[in-house]
Length: 469
Image (cartoon, rainbow, N blue to C red):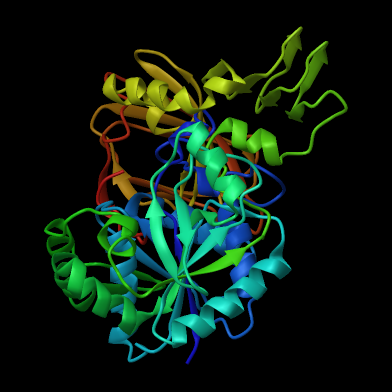
C-alpha cells in the first residue's frame, strides 16, 4: 500500500494578476524563492516517506509548462500528468485521479491530494501531519488538514473540530466578528483544501453523495488514453460531468470526515496581501522584488519584473510591474484585483490571457514590438527541440540567429544557420525550425503581413500532438 501524491494544478490565481495569467498561472510563478509553487510542492511530496512519484492533474493548455517545470527539478522520471479537457472544479479532478489509480489495481493506496499553489514553510511538521493522516485514511476516513489559525481571517472556510479527530462541521467564510469568535474558542481550524483518503474510500463516498460525478469520471478514466507521461481523460465523458468542488460534493455531507491539526507554516497566497504577509521585508516593512528604488515607503509590496520602479511616500500599497501591465492599489483592496481580471476577460484583452513571453513545449517566444502589419519576436528553442512543420497564409517571416545554431527547412531547402546569419520564409512556404545544438538557440523573427495572429498556422507534422497553436 503506497502513498500516492495527487497535485491539483488547475486554475489561474486571478488575484495575483498581472503576474498570473490564464496561460501562465500562479502555480508556475516564482513568488517566494528560486522555485515556483508547483516545483516546491513536488519537492515536498517527493521527500515524504513511502511516497511514489506524484500525479499532477492539469488542463491541456498547461501540460508542457507543467512537464518542463517538473523535469527541471531533476528529481524523478516516472511522474504522471493527468490532462483535463475541461476545468470542472476539484470534485471531478479528484474523482478522476482516484479512478485512474483504481484502474491500476491500487485502490487501497492512500491519495494525498494537494493544491499546487500553496506555500508550506515547515516541511517537517507537514511530513508529521501526513503520517497522522495516512493512519486515519487507512482506517477508512476522509481526512482533511486543518490549519491552526493565528489571526481572525475572513477569506478562508473553517472546520469545527468534534471528538478526537472527527469533524463536527464545515463553516463558510465568516465575517470579522465571527472569525474573532472562532479564533478565541480554539475549536476552529482553517480549511486548507488538502486531503488524504484511499482511492476506494473516496469513490465509495462520492458514489453516495455525488453519483453523477463518479459515473462520468470513472468513464473518463476508463476511456482515457495514455500519451507518454501524459494521460488524457476522455473528452466526451468529462464534458457530461457536473462541475463541483470536493467540499460541496462530499466533505460537507460525509460522516467519515476527520481532521488533522497542521501547524505547517501554511498560506494559500490567495492575494497580493497574503504574499506580502509571508514575504521577507525590509526595516520599513516593505516586500521588494526586482529593480526598485524606494523613498519614504512603508508596509508595501513593490515588485518589478522588467524595468525600474521608483516609489515615494507610499503606505500600505501594492505596485506590481510586468512588461505589459502595471497594478497599483491599496493593500486592503488586494482581493479586488479579480474585478480587474473579470473586465479584461470580458473585453477580450490579451493581458488576461498571456504575457509578452509565451511558453511552448519547444521553448518560448517574446513579443518585442507589434504593429498593424508587422511584429518582432525573440524566439528561444531548447537544445534538441524543433517546432512543427508548418505554413502561414498571411505572413512572411525573416529569421536572424543571435546565438546558437538553427536548422531551417525552407520549402525544399534545408540550411544550417549560425550566429548573425539569416533566412527568409515567404508566405505559403512549408517550413520548420530546429535547434540541433547543445545550447539554447535564440533568434529574432520579423513577421510582415496582413494578418499576424497565432491561429494562422497550418501544421503538417508536430511531435507534441498539437493541431492548432
